[in-house]
Image 1 (cartoon, helix red, strand yellow):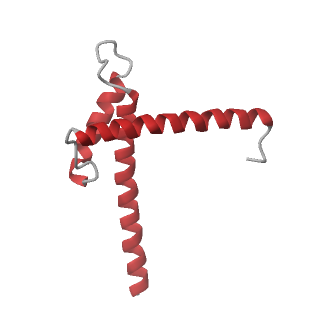
Image 2 (cartoon, one colour):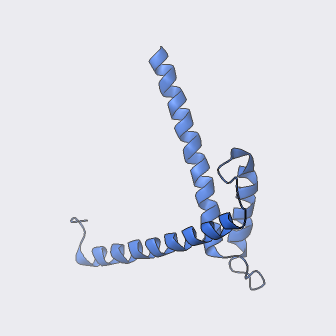
Image 3 (cartoon, one colour):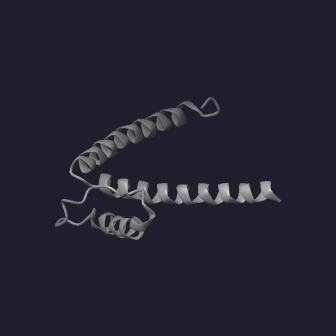
Length: 103
């Protein structure tokens, strides 16, 4: 962060605080959902349903009649999609590494 000017550092600090606060809200919502029985988000078989809910939640954020949809829910669903891709990419990299080791 030393390469940034004072104005950039101030903006970055605000952004990082906002992300930290938002992440806390995400974690709380995930805990609440887990407590009510929501499970399986890490299972690839639910990925299409999660993507569908993400699109639905994200598009409903601005709708006045969809107050039950919240940006935190959309963010949590996006995290789940991101996690599945990361997990898939890691598995593919691991398989490729094993293949190269065996050659």
